[in-house]
Length: 601
Image (cartoon, rainbow, N blue to C red; front, side, top):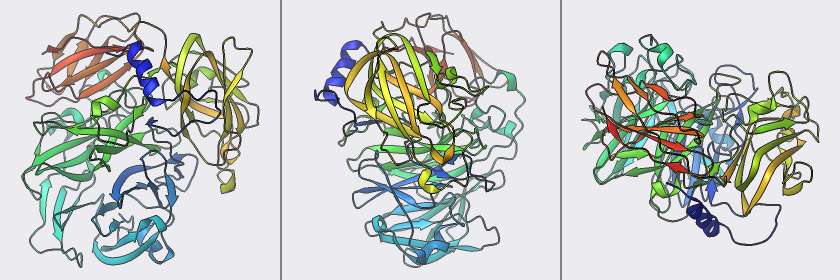
């Protein structure tokens, strides 16, 4: 449970008293989705109406992080701290090996002490092999070819004690397959190929409901309208392997990238090449509800300090089904070896301490959302894109002004004075010109606060910015109090209109924590144990509910966020047959979280 005292303590620790400033200090926190420039690409067509990236791989090499993503900038990125990223590109000598035209799809990337290795999943289905390229100096874009390997869908290269292993498989006709190669030549070692997970042929034969949801559910958090009607075969994909305490963890994504239920399933084994068993605590990563959902096709990696992280694909789907973003979440392995991705309120601010930490201490650490369903007004609006849609905590709706002219603005009225610690500005793409020069692709704006909605004080001036910041996240150097916030346009990318998916404000609402949710009842569907119906009593001072559940009372690793306090029931569809579950309803508002009481079936 969070309270005002803990929030003020966090603010004191994170920020020094430096007076009024117009630029944020070095950030210690971030907010999903990651604020990358993202490439202008479409997975299936050549239209470039929106930004997108997916299928992330992050590797640590020579004390720097390198990020590779599908259908993005056509290169990769480097960072010292996982917060600020710089774009890099492949040298011309390996251009054909690295890219399919100007992008690449679902690459296998891994690093040892000497090189970063990169293998592209080419979309040329006639190709029998693909090039393996490597770099000892990726920061300067210097790559060379070092071998060839069979063409694979969604490959993963895993290096363990100097031995190189591949895992791959995509869709309803491919199993997850394993083989080993010679590290010097990348020639396959005869007799090592093995199927580790058979592909799914019938959704109704799946033991777990995590495979439900491909297209049917899309952005719905409740399965009531689809119970018993799931027909789409899932699309398992994106194998990834990590090793912790001599145990191997094999992940794959399901049911498909175009829904908020996109998640990862984990299998454990004591061997690198077989004996993998799906775990009763699956899915291992799930982000449903809130501003943006999805946490699948992930990579898990260690940072410089020995902390585990997961980078994952998050779904948008506004301009194209495959419009996606990248999320970053802390990961832990407990004393029992159970793997856990911390995604509760996973699109709220999180800390990235540059030191060893405990994941539960940095995720959802205390700055609460102030902007949900707050009264909004704007300089102008297009029909169907009203101002209130920039305050609805939904990445799939947005406000748009009638133009992209300087001076267009959006104002949010909190209805009271609140404490503001950080702001996330999620810009939307509205009527952009695909052919506009690359030099026009940047956001410039100013941010103001007010006590009365008439007299404004500027707190951020980004009028001189010349980079694309589609999910701009700003820590304020000192917390401020205000009743209103205003963003004014200076420049919109690619000749588009000034538009916001959401203006999200975080801090403390000067309220009491919400009341405890009571009356929780759970009814497991005995004809199909993948479903359970939950109901609870309304809590009038809550902004929403966190529906927590898991296979043990000490491991409630699943969470579905229900926005608003009017909805007091949920049909959960991702349970595993034969597994008993425990449930808890937490409440949250603009000032904190109140835990509920655990009940069993």
